[in-house]
Image (cartoon, rainbow, N blue to C red; front, side):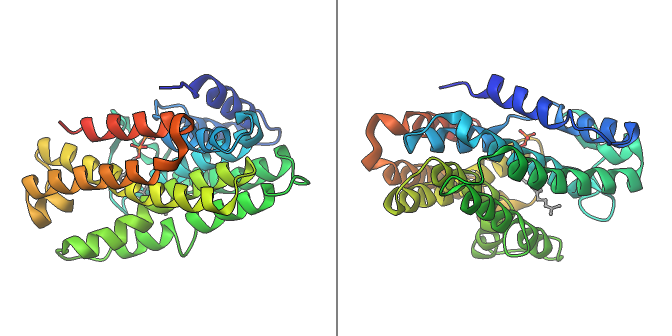
Length: 270
Ligand code: GRG
């Protein structure tokens, strides 16, 4: 699978090399930004840009913006008022190390910095680039990821359909936006953007389902295994992977990254 990590890591390091950020805030932002995330969303953004026929570098500020936004969402998700999780990626969560107020601010700063970086580093005169940034704003915002989080923090057991609606927003919307943004910035036509959106929707669900299966294997309750049982959840994961791969049908070799990622994601919960 093509490795976009060196490009993404250097882009993220450069994005944090901005003047004027107070030292404690910078340490708090970097603590979670550089904590071993898999960088799936920015990799997908760059792969979509290449699939559309452009160089990955064209979409790099967008890819970094998506990862900055993802990082903010994790910091805020771990807060006591949200998921109240003291650990993230095997280390104490941001608010445990820096305190709750600073963690809120680190999230705020990462979210805002994402848009500053995307719009100051990208070529805003090129057709598609501003639309790509708008895709990311929509996917991250009040009708996207934040909508999903708002629905998710309501208490109560959920049916599989309710989970699907929440996850399509909470987890799926930013993944979909990352792919659409990369494709649009890379000059993709509407048919390509549509097919990649269908791929993203199936992949986003697959990603959440396999995350739930991993949690269930570690003894956690909730998500799809609690709603429909482990066997049905596995069957749903296989169905999502098939649908994702089908959406890539017309792209041939250009979609090899997305095919391999889908297969790897399906296998991660086995
Ligand atoms: C606070 C507005 C707001 C939103 C939070 C992303 C999110 C919404 C909550 C995280 C809850 C969670 C564990 C969701 C499961 C799927 C998921 C997003 C896992 C984490 O993403 P990875 O696996 O993380 O890409 P890494 O660590 O690789 O960056």
